[in-house]
Length: 212
Image (cartoon, rainbow, N blue to C red; front, side):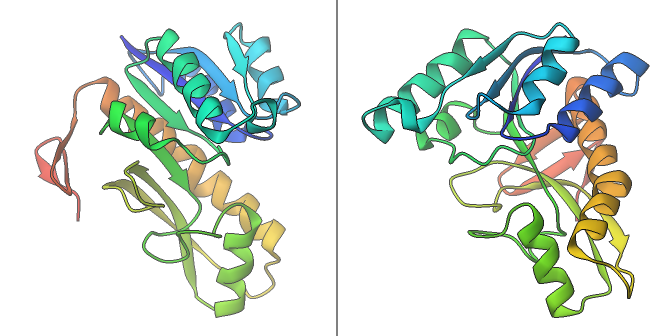
């Protein structure tokens, strides 16, 4: 059984997709042992509570230094003893010590086809605004392992989504969630839970085939 800790900051739509996936059998061999948020008012915490999942919160604002927050954050996560950390709309900077402690055991969902529209400053609605400004025809979402960089870890899954001429950032964001994020995040967790994902350096091997 894969034990996962899910980190969130806002509404928790990807968290809900994971909860639903476990309940309907799309995600197998998996249990959510903790939902963590840096925002005590995040609606994601209500989603977790309704599903009977333990929650914890901590904000950098509650600590004198960032180092103290980072230590508390890592301690909270480690106390749940997860096998995998899932960043599902988590906007707090992940401490380097946590990244090192969970090398190839932390994944993130990003709302674009990495390496396009990613890196510092590209998050949430800002990604979709830039996609429309650039005039690209295809966007999507990416699930990747987390490393010391921003959106630079090995890619696990990607799903393309067509951009429409009359899209607004909000409309495009919703379609990327529905057609990509809520599908590939549960699928990635299920693959990991069933031992089908392996990392060799920068290469991700799924069921014996290299992701390209």
